[in-house]
Amino acid sequence: MSGNPDPKFCKKNQHFVPRFWMKRFAAADGRLFGRRRGDARATPVAPGGIMTDDWTYTVFDSLWRPADALEDALSVFEGKAAEIMAALD
Image 1 (cartoon, rainbow, N blue to C red):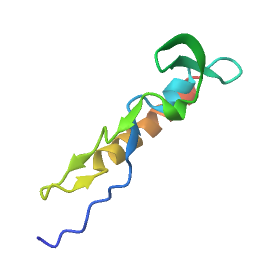
Image 2: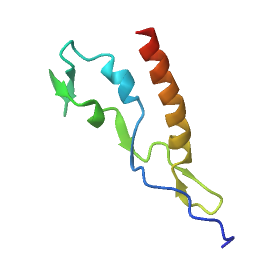
Image 3: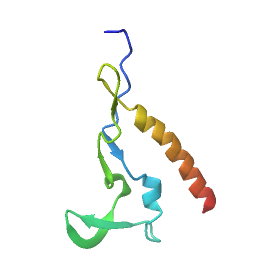
Image 4: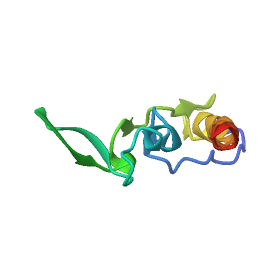
């Protein structure tokens, strides 16, 4: 081992569409509608549980240890985008 500290790796589930963006498509009462398990009827869904997958943005260091570095970097841009969209609203 090279003595490198272990990279931060704790984010298993990551959204590939940011929640702030999904909430923009919610109904006036805040509900978001989507399909559930192939059911074609629109049912209320929570933005926290859709458009997400496990380890989507996991990267590996030179020792093949998983890390959250990409997710952390993207979250900075997502935060800035959310601020811009809120200002535009």
